[in-house]
Amino acid sequence: MNSKIRLIGFLITSLLVAAMISRDGDLAWMMLPFLAYLLVGVLRSPQSDRLMFTVVRSVERSRFDGKTSLDVNVSIQNESMQPVQVRIDDMIPPESRLLDGKGKRLTLLQPDETTEINYTLSIKRGDYSWKSIQVTVCDPLGLIQVEKLLPAPAAVQIRPDIRKYKAIALRPRSTLHSPGSIPARMGGSGTDFYGIREYQPGDPLRSLDWRMTARHPFKFFTKEFEQEEIADIGLILDGRQICEVRLGDESLFEHGVNATASLAEMFLHQGHRLSLMVIGRRLNIAFPGYGKIQLNRVLGCLARARIETEERVLTHLDFLPVRIFPSHSLIIVISPLVPGDLSFYQHLRANGYQVLLISPDTIDFAQSILPADINNRLAVRAVQVERRLLLDSIRQLSIPIINWKIDQPLFPLVRNALTRSRGQGE
Image (tube, rainbow, N blue to C red; front, side):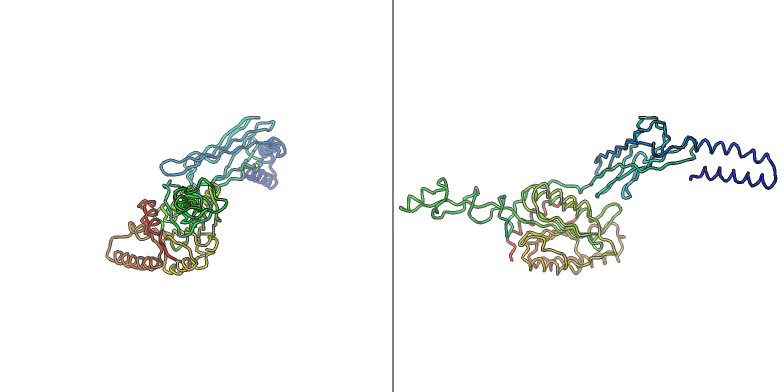
């Protein structure tokens, strides 16, 4: 029951009561126009079982000036046998912002006529979905309304930005026994010469070294080539609330998400096996895998990654299930670091993992908004000393560290760190 019916009902009741109290027939006659108006509205009211609509929703993603937007189009066709007055209300996702157009429309639809709603949303990384659209049909006088929820499903996933990195010539301490591009320091199938050994039955004749065989009568020797394999790589992204710094719309965590996505794409493109763990509102894990399917899983996990809420504060990393990463993997941790994280890196090294730490510099990131007075300068200096001591303690565990300032390109830093870490000991 809408406001018009309430108002007309109130007027009819008031006139009836006034006519009965004053015993005035003229007041009773004044009710007739309102009764006729109400009767026409009831007779012309839409019948729910005769209302039929076809709804089609399409969603298109576009990118302009570094920002992602969604163009949403909803088409509604009237399949009823009579014209209907409809009001269309579409749901706007809560984490989006309307840039252009409207999600509502009031129009008169003739039989088989189609109307459309078009609007553009400014959106951030994440999952967005629509299930239905609300259509309200009313009589020509606007008295009786029938609301219907029509199915109009659609879903879109906004993934992190990926920067294409060139391939890095990895030299991990341990490799996975699958064909790849990393010299494995053992004989097998490959292209680079590795050594010569005595011929064994079953060796291909094309690998015989005839010169060495000529020097040693009655013996045959075969050439060995260095086997090329792939690496096991694990990525850990730190999304704890205690590590987050926001400057307006810019977030330190978002920089970490984009860096993780770029590294994952680079390693999977080289053919390595990759796994991912995101510490945030929930623990998102992509178990070890290869190729484009694994990249799709990793980007899906990163798209759903959110900063951990205060209700479930995870201040220490010691109890993370790091055993999801295969033994002797190369673990790359993207974390701004907080005091107390040292034991986590000791735990990783004790379990035999080769570790690289990429630590976004929170001090450099937040320093631009701090007032330039003596107290803030002293506080910044004290925090820098504390951070430097923590980094030095982690570096003593034979862990290469990238102290990443966000405005610096990450790829040269990662390439140099992985090149220097080839000899990381046990």
